[in-house]
Each structure stands twice: as structure tokens, then as C-alpha cells.
Amino acid sequence: QVQLQESGPGLVKPAETLSLTCTVSGYSISSGFYWGWIRQPQGKGLEWIGSIYHSGSVHYSPSLKSRVTISVDTSKNRFSLELKSVTADDTAVYFCARVYPVLQYFDPWGQGIVVTVSS
Amino acid sequence: QSALTQPPSASGSPGQSVTISCTGSRGDIGTYNFVSWYQQHAGKAPKLIIHEVTERPSGVPDRFSGSKSGNTASLTVSGLQAEDEAVYHCSAYAGRDIVIFGGGTRLTVL
Image (tube, rainbow over all chains, first blue to last red; front, side):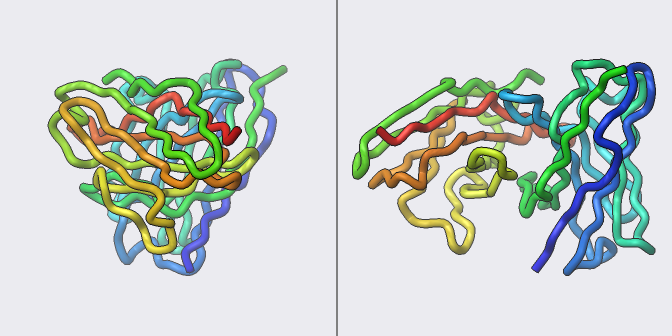
């Protein structure tokens, strides 16, 4: 059974970099699939941030592309998100998920991690 | 690529059917059959309930069904149960390796 778990700081200062990691268990990232990040501001809808393949091929949301880096570490079976120059608008629950290539759906999801941007 | 449009809320009584719409454009829902729906209970992660417009993953009750017409996809929940009360999100492939979501619809079981 595939499981994903987000980890990282729950509080980030404005203008700094948000860094999160998603550790995958029950499946080898190297075996295939894309792996993605999605966020959800309090009381709002979901926003796709980006997705990465085990080879390193990566796709980003156009609205966040200038500030986002997603990377993968197959040796540790995990992938990571970096979001630069954060503001209060980046405060959200951040989810990681497995992404079915071509079909573009997300399953399963991690439980999510709350990240607050505040000084 | 704009977000998909969903009604903010929907409701129905137990046993009734409710349909939630998800409106996109010719460049996403209108072109690709890559529409998915997610159920999210309060404080929980989203759960996939429909993919590729009409396909239900194993374990998802057949009370949940999906469809598409033109630029609009729909999720129908038949035989409403109390446990169906949740927020429902749609997503779609928008081409050029981009995925977009709707704003979510809160379903209330009266």
C-alpha cells in the first residue's frame, strides 16, 4: 500500500524559502509515476504546484513557476518542494500525491502539512 | 489557464440525488477526457473518487458517477448518505503538462 508523508517547518518568515519533503513508502519512486505537490489555502480550493518524474523531468504551474523548484531523491525514496520569496498568500496546507502520467489524476495523497508564512 | 468553476455549495436530503457541475473551457474539459473528482472530509486529505470523467477506483461506491458534456463535467451522487457530506473538488488536464482545479463544492446532507 502506497503511503506518502509530508514533513518540514510549519512556520516560514516572509521573503524566505519554504522547503518541504514528501517521503514515499510501499512503492519505489524509481518504478514510475509522477509525484506532485498541491496546496490548499484555508477555506479555499486546491491548487496544483507541480509534478516530477523519477528521471527528474518536471512540470510546474505557470503561476508559480518563477518561484518553485521540485526535486527527487530516488536513493531516499522522496521528493521535495522549494518555494522562494514567500508571502502570506503562500500560507496553506501543502499536500503531496502520486500522479498518474498522461491521465493526470492524483492518488493517493499525503495527509498534508500546514505551513504558515509569518514573521 | 484559469481555474475550473464549481458552485460553492449543494445540498440534498438522504436518499436523494445531487449533481455538482465543473465548468472549464475548450482548452481543458472540452478537449481532454482527463477529468477527476476528489472527496474531502473536514480536516482530511482529498480522496480520488472519479478519474477519466467516468471511471471509479476500486472501493468507491457506485452511487458516485461522473459525466461530461462540452466544456462542463458533472459529478452525481445518488442515494445520498450522511457520510457523503464533504467538499468535492474537480480537476482537469489543461494541456502542456498543466493541471487545474476547481474551487470546490461543499455538499450538505440535510
